[in-house]
Image 1 (cartoon, rainbow, N blue to C red):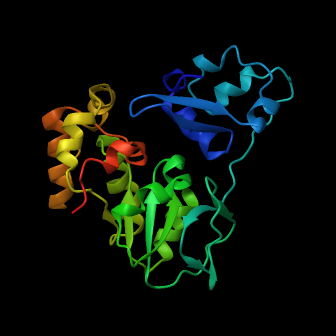
Image 2 (image 1 turned 120 degrees about the vertical axis):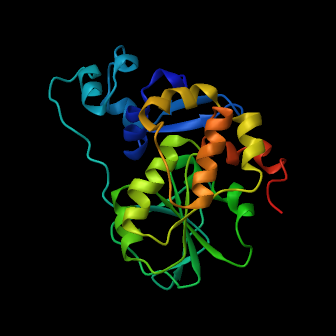
Length: 249
């Protein structure tokens, strides 16, 4: 199924529940891949493209017995850190689910990510961060917000470089942990201009046109987004184009 065929809120809910994967065909093209759990639960998919929320999607299944698959209330993590005094297992294209918040060594850099693929493919993005740091990538959900509230580690939030992504940082992330910094790669202005999406900007403009930040570096990013009238989703940085842009010095 094409990426644009599902509403963004529905995509996120299905991805949170582990029912779909987002696959990259190119820097600008993505495809939704249904997992076996999705196919087993939703027998009839004729109306999926018209669904806007997870609740509406229930109507697309053939079984008349309606039930909701609740997302797991826990942390989805990946990286090369130690948790609970043990090295985090590293499996390619996989993540680890923890029901409870773990203990993390104090020198570990925690990196919150907005999109699940950025968690799964964390190795392709580690070149952004300090080589000598242990990295713990954490997927954004309710449990991650609880984790941020309780940790004393250094935290970076690595989200989409668009108005909605900055709003999440300002209104969700920093409310839980004021010390969390927004990850802004060097060369972001060039990347916005060259690879950003005008469609993404226009979709978000009315809702977030008055967005501001008291943090100078974040306010500057907001101004860049308005200047070029473009947004850049974080999945871009999984792709080879991100590596070849010389954005890290």
